[in-house]
Image (cartoon, rainbow, N blue to C red; front, side, top):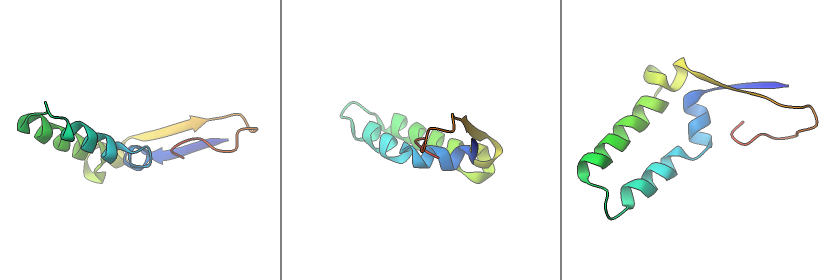
Length: 70
């Protein structure tokens, strides 16, 4: 059965914020890199950017009960 989500919702469910926080907390991450990470996160998940414009679809076998992120 197909499942469709917005890109933003899917990425949030997959833990993108935690991943960005991990990258930002690295000792060698510069302020410019941290700013770029935040900017990229917003671009990927905000509804007025790519967050709602793009969709994620999973097509799975009926025997599979759950798909991560959906």
